[in-house]
Amino acid sequence: MKISKEYRWEMGHRLPFHKGLCKNIHGHSYKMSVEITGSVNKNGMIIDFFDLNKIIKPIISKYDHAFLCWEGDKKVREFLKRNKLKSVIVKYQSTVENICSDFLEKIGTKLLKSKGHGFEELTIKIYESPNSYAEKSRILHGEIL
Image (cartoon, rainbow, N blue to C red; front, side, top):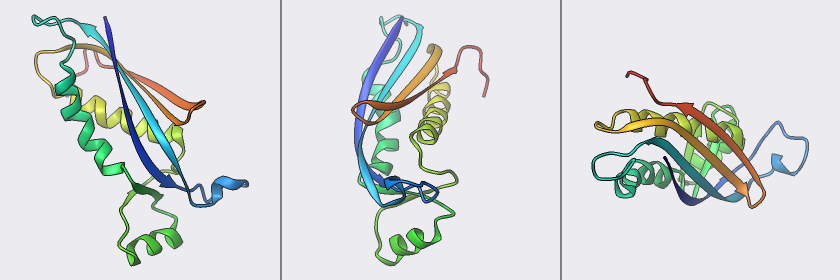
């Protein structure tokens, strides 16, 4: 069985290495699809959507209306700090592929801490525009923390 839930947030970033327009400060309306496959529990659910929200919404709120900044982008980091702007500093370039990998790790780790669930696989798909996305999956079945 598979369930899916979508989440949305707004976030700014830039890619300082980029040769085109993405080297400039800009933002996206991100959409994330979270899919979980697994066995249905005694209540007839893989996981209650309420419980899934308790895992994912705190992650999203950290990034929503923030500027995602690579730690090596000193010029922008100084600007964000000087102006006391909401930011998330990361060790990776803020490509949708890297964001997807980061979210997959964060969400997967929290799901594995949930007791009494028969999760098998987690798939994260993050859209940075209506027709551009990155997708990554992680097997959860049999993982031990």
